[in-house]
Amino acid sequence: MKYSLLVLPICFVLACTPKASQVVDTADATDTAPTKAELGLSPCDNFDDAFDPDETSANYIIYKDFIDYENYDEAFKLWLDVYKEAPAADGKRDDIFTDGVFFYERLAMGAPDSITKAQYVNRIFELYEEAAVCYPERSSNLKAKKAFDLFFKFPDMASKLDIFSLFKEALDEDRSTKQYFVLNPMTSLLVDLYLSESISKEEALEYAQLMQQILAEGLATCSGKACDNWKIIEGYVPQRLEAFETIKGFYDCSYYLEKYYQDFLDDSTNCEVIQTLYIRLNWADCSPEDPRFQKLIAAANDLCVEDKELKVAYNLLRAGSFKSAIDAFIEAEAATDEIEEKAAINFIISKIYYAHLKNFPKARQFARIAAQQKPNWGEPYLLIGRLYASSGPLCGPGTGWDSQIVVWPAIDKWNYAKRIDPSVAAEANKMIRQYSKFMPNKEDLFFRQLSVGQAFRVGCWIQENTSIRTSD
Image (cartoon, rainbow, N blue to C red; front, side, top):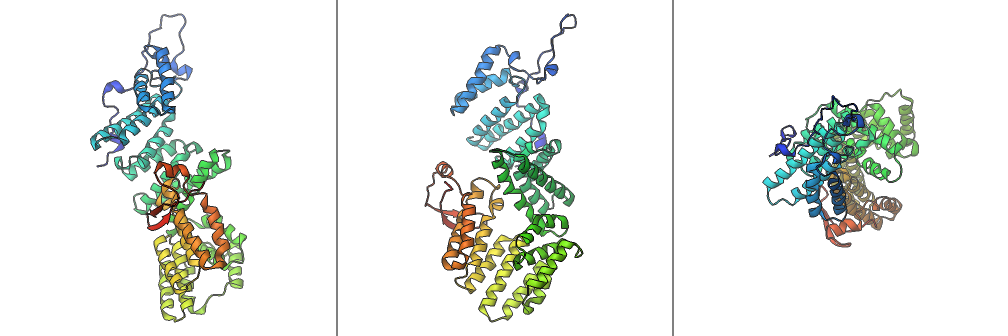
């Protein structure tokens, strides 16, 4: 059963709502003390409002130390006292509320039954609401954290649309890089909801562009370790948003030119690069009068000679009629008796599914057929490895365990490719070096009680057995 975010109770009992400080009538006083608002403090009770300010402040410091030493039971007991007396801490920070969220998340994870868990989860969201009352200027950040918890920790407590709406509210209030942790989960929801026709194209395009804009700003302005977070986001958001490239008219010509034209400039004699970009620009209805498109067409005419027997299939492919093109290639494959030609055609079909339709299972299916038809050919296995390595955003949130373990079967395929076909060894080694750093580390294995070399089955759409390795 899903619970609407709008009907979560503000508190189990009235007593747990943060107390507003009692107003003292000082109308007759000669010297009026500055108000909390004038001091820039939260209107809710802080340490100075506690029955014993010194004791409450000390308990605050002690429970923080207990958390550092992972003595969570004692920390929680002291937190309850501090929260009761001074939920706003010193009036300038909301960490008593967010610490409470941490404690109740631990309790929810270890709850003995679903009813108790639901009570703890409700308490978490009450704390977020209370924090927003005491610190309204942090409303957007608190909404973002609440949506983040719903997405990753308690997805059964709200619908995808409710969680997305909460992320949207947070971003609409603060469209800055401070909301970086919103980008991956919101991108996942954005794609899923648009593909299920739950949100409009206009809304999907607006937020797709916004998240890419925030990502670009974050990458341009980050420094030091903060850049690590932005690199993780960079590895997820653009890839996941590529799903919209399969929808005619979703992105305009400028999107494809900005994203892919540099590939042609970097490798202007590679027919595969030329043809792939030509297809994308045609798909985006780019004008043939555009100088960049004209340069591409000239390169295609000069360098890329197509098999006349496949002319119909290639014309359909260039026109962006991908499914019709696949049917035409399948007919051409059935009409030839040449095994190597059959393999080449099936490999073309595999690449159409990969590059243009983003259908990874189908791409693997035809790559496997091509590999069977032409033994000791490494190219199909290089492609399958790319499919697996690109599946982090499909099989997980772009970071963490589920998104990292896809690298293991990818490396298996690249190792196999260079073993059977030395001509692809350089490319295989390049990809192995590039992706090995994204494997889980020793700490990830220790946490899950796994060990290096142990057999492991990767799920998601991959469904392959592999062996465990680490990046360190």
